[in-house]
Amino acid sequence: MSLQEDLYELFLLDTQVRGLRSRLDAAMRRQKAQQTKLDKIENQLGELRNQLKHQQSAAMTAEKESNEIDEKIKQSREQMNAVTSNKEYSALLVEVNTLKIDKGKAETVALDHLNATEETQKNIDVIEQQVDSQKNLVEAASKDVEEARVAVGDQLDKVEAERAESAKKIPTASLAIFDRLAYEHDGEALAEIEEQNRKRNEYTCGGCYMQLPIERISSTASKPNAITTCPTCGRILFMKTENIEALSGK
Ligand SMILES: [Zn+2]
Image 1 (cartoon, rainbow, N blue to C red):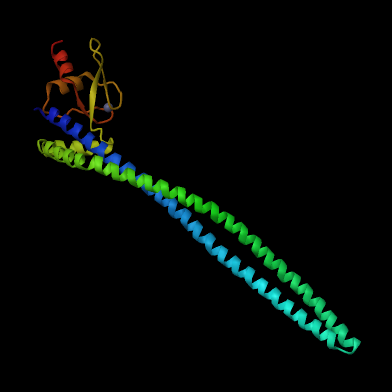
Image 2: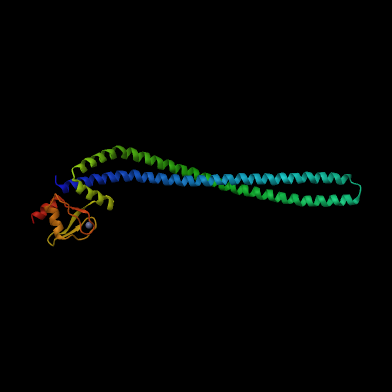
């Protein structure tokens, strides 16, 4: 086989390797994205549960305070029944009224905290549902990764071995050019010469679609053991055998 044919074989195997890898990579990226989303929602849920605990304990503290004031009011009332002087009675009455105001305040605080608790609980219910559905998405994405691994695994090993074998046939300098171009053009190291009009010598590069000078066409066709590149994009040019034959028969 000529260098051009060897390069073309390597190109096809390289394309297969990239295709298989990208399927697995894409599945893994999706799984990671869904997991990140789940982590974020679970974090949010943790914060809300914390908030709920604080609100509940604040409500309990305010209720306790209200009960304590109530106790004091009872005691003052009992004292009022026992006092004999008007002055003492009036003083206790003032105290009871002040305590009643304090009790009202404590009750309002307790109620506010209870309302906040309810609101937080509602939010928690919503987020818990989100966590559940997000867990399903993560599970589905993980399953996709497993499936891709199974589907791709053996095949990828096999094609990678074939690619390595194919690369051995190519001289080091040419292989370095191939690898660099494959890196630069996302796997498209080679570009097929596309015949637009043979009579008018119009040919374009299948990689960048630019018109190719005729000397690149003849050098591709006449020097199968050399690398001819596209002057615009730099890809290695190759031509279908039937086109080469047609060209030389012209
Ligand atoms: Zn080109």
